[in-house]
Image (cartoon, rainbow, N blue to C red; front, side, top):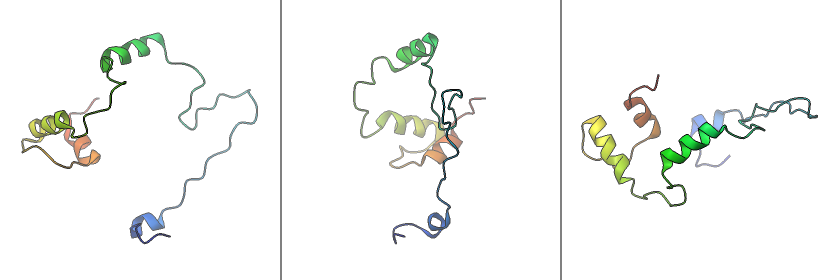
Length: 94
């Protein structure tokens, strides 16, 4: 294994996919796939939320995210922020 992997990563077992359906009798949902399209309400909500921004590249400096994290974490704007730290810092969605 590559010397770039840390010891923890080297000890992980690789993912082994489960059994896949061989016929059309079953709906395959085990790999985050869905044979059905999203509901019209979901499409409307996504369209309203992104406000036509999906056709553009995101801000490479993530200024808005960094400023929001500064407010939430009461600190100076963050130059690098792990997703875990950010998620644990945000209010719970539940």
